[in-house]
Length: 241
Image 1 (cartoon, rainbow, N blue to C red):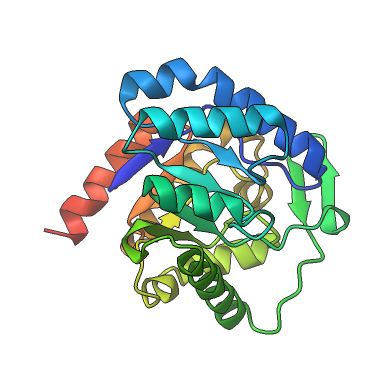
Image 2: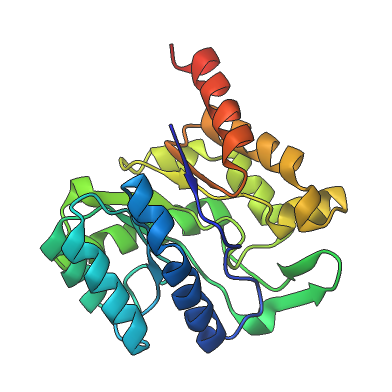
């Protein structure tokens, strides 16, 4: 189990694509020193050439490191060149399910953004099917199967109740045959469930992490690394020995 820390919030519901791209560039640049010191670089982008800095930064990281965990929040759909780049470097690729649309988001000052208009014919059929479509597209671009990690995209284009359902049934994603990541950390579905702002969501995050691990999550992506690493290790001690 890996507690994979980023020092920034996930893209917030309702944020315009240009704002998201800009924020990700700034976050990635701030992380250069930290990720190099830790020996693992994570870069999150939606387009290989969305802005010149993203392309420069991404290629710079992949040129310097063989072991790079790259999160592609658009899941290779916005820019197939990202798949080609990942295939060239044979770095791990996290493919995240994402039906986010700004018009489906609502924002409250204390609790932040949440999705209210996300509709699925059958949540537990639609999300796994679309995740497999992402994996198939990545492999068609040359990404090897063993490079792929799948992420159901907790908080991205899902209502509060849909996020709770996905974590409750996280075992559904293990059936796809790939390692699976869960990223519930401090997200608004926790805030709206417990009526808490982001800085008070550690316990809610711990509960979501524990359930996801119990249902088969292989990687958790968190902000509060020390307590969540302890949660992960304890879950593994109970469940996987």
